[in-house]
Length: 507
Image 1 (cartoon, one colour):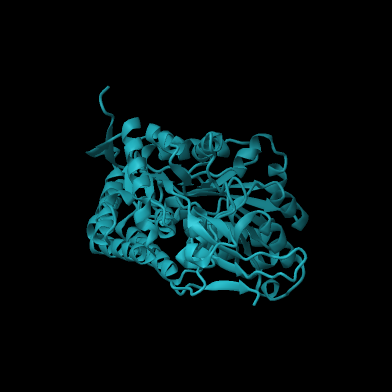
Image 2 (image 1 turned 45 degrees about the horizontal axis):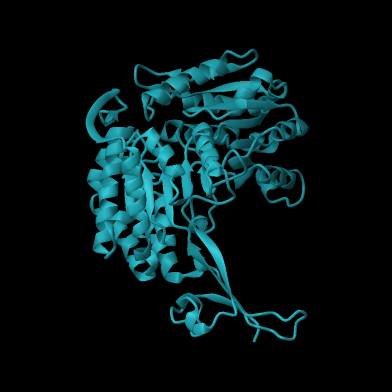
């Protein structure tokens, strides 16, 4: 059978740019995973691992012009956006290198023996070890930060796990370029290049999740694709952890007091958040609860003006464009749904931004209106007009899990302590992994306290794919009971030869 070519495609024209690779066969996936598995011991040295991560960041920065040019040609995201994304990407590598040096991610705990307890307590020493080979499924909308050199890859390598990435078909040339830089960084740091591998093709992705030497997987993408892989991971003879970031509606609630105080400001900010990256952020606000009445009308007017002035944009590929156009057409055709700024086709290769407006009481009817409570990937949001706080609360109670939930409050509400605003905070906390007040969810800071995940279907686990604790996904705890010091791992020995932070209980 002839090999299936992998083409780089220009989303601005829909035309093939170049053949980058061929789809991986069963044998080639097996070889990549086995080579990564064989190389896992080389990542045991924390100092060499940290040097690898920093070298990878340096090489990506040195090749910035080539990386950005390749990514822009395949995604149409623009040099400005991609320059920022590359900085975020290299920042993640350096942050995880710092985490490896510091060592608290190992969560070392020592309970000294205590013969006076009933029953007597033996000596216990606990830390975390890497799982093994990690499969990473790259995202379409972040060709760098959630792709081959993305946070899943960086955190897995930091944990000591080799990585095999299933490249996204929207940016194969970028994927190959970045993979070559990571593999070169490994060699410079004294590691085998095989600690990072890339495979292409839909079937290769299925082979990867089923491979017996793959120990965990990370995914960013659609609910449908993520759920299929999640089910495959669970159906293996030995199930493995599957950390998937799937779909999210990212609801926003604008209180009546906030609308009265700054309707125009909120409307303009919403437009900017909805259209950032042509609406292709996983945290784009897709449902906005706005009070009925004059203040809600002022907010809608500001949103109408801002979106009406937004130029059409190019989506990541033509399939996404077709899905977006069909999705907004289906939603706009529902009775009672208005389109003050009609989203949809903006030309042969572009889409226009817009929004839909519907009363909350209509959404509460369910049935065909359920589609308005599903993510529509692209520059569109749904303005849901509520008659009172109870109506807004009823709609929030119908929503599935989300990555984010945002509250737009008045100054008095934000400073008021217990009351309706606090009740809203409590309600949306049950819905989302990140709660935002008087800001917008687009933009996910790479920081130790960040959480990028949420209740299903936002994610398939309670972990985060962004921030310092993302490393925890690729580790498992092991406790050693009454093991002689000379036989313990260096991380747990009494003299603490690696000078790692540890929590000690007992004398």
